Picture (spheres, one colour):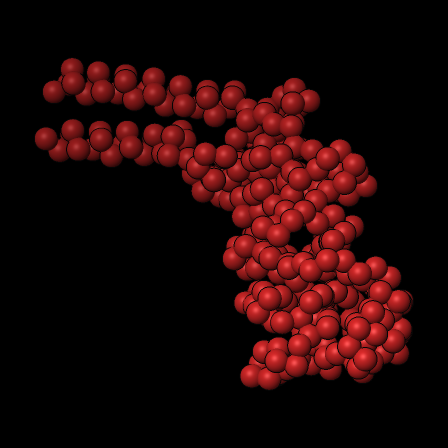
Length: 293
């Protein structure tokens, strides 16, 4: 029994030392870009796989000049990100505005995007040139609301791009000011409206003519509470394992000492299944079993 205990102790000592050395000497190196054009890229976002929070994986791309937000309906240019207010403003070049009329177009997000980075409450979707049989003018008319006192007549009369609608029908066609949820559950074909436009900062647009509105879509997001401050303060970047989705503290390739970055650590506070502390506890448990024999 004594010989078995000595042999077991020696084996687990080697395992413990090896895992300790691995944790201390093997940094997880990465190149996480921190900007795209004039837009700063910080957690929870990333444009390189494995960077940022896994929830936002694959939602952004960079062509070296512009940052784009990717959805099933297209790529939307990111105009700005406010990390303090946790908002992103995107612009769809295929969207109609007061000055240009674009072809029929839908705005579609995935279920995950709709959940974690939805359009903000102060983004209004204006559905244009709707049929009198449109669902939002009949059974779902409660989905349309008053938008800072603005009307369809004002929208069609003030915008050069939209004046074509009354001209073609010899009347003012219905329109509908609504929220993103309407677009989320019904396509433009179902809504029976030919075009749409989106306006942001709508709380400040009372009395402002449509030609001076700010067109675009504002998205709101939250930052996952993962405790990555420790990683950032150590010189690392919060990211994730691209295979398992587990959170990691990623070190820059320019970091020349593991003391400068909590390399490979699970910054959420959990433990790797192969961490030295876990191996030690397994050893103690196994040793206690042997001694009880």
